[in-house]
Image 1 (tube, rainbow, N blue to C red):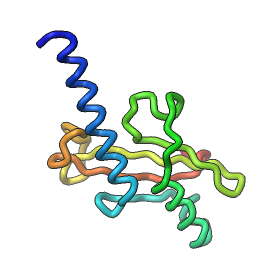
Image 2 (image 1 turned 120 degrees about the horizontal axis):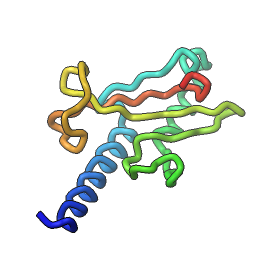
Image 3 (image 1 turned 90 degrees about the vertical axis):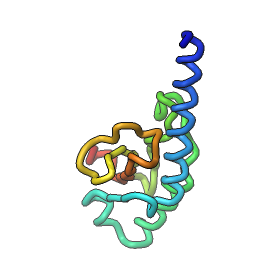
Image 4 (image 1 turned 180 degrees about the horizontal axis):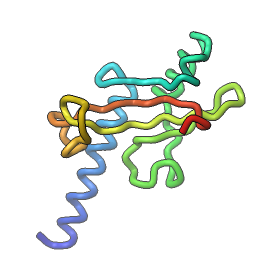
Amino acid sequence: MTSSNHQQVAVDRTATIRSLNDAFRRNPTAGRAVITSGVSALPHDQRLALLMAVVGFTAFDAGNDPHNEHDFGAIEADGVSYFWKIDYYDQDYDMGSPDPANPHVTRRVLTIMRADEY
């Protein structure tokens, strides 16, 4: 395989991971979603608004998405900074996924936290 073929494979793999992450973020019930104690302590309406901000997040840039996989974001809500991130696990959620680009061997977990909990 030539260097340009390797680069194309890497680009395609990144595009696949990005697409899977976007689909999961828009529908977190397709995997697992967890919130930290700081988010859990919010009133229900604020938690729901924060989740909706994560689901609708599109502000990706080189600073928050250096690998172009759409696996992290930062949101400001009511003067508080929050982070969300997607991690990749194996089918049993025991170890890391062997291939985040393959949905058949990967389970995604979305974590939403206060920035000061990171």
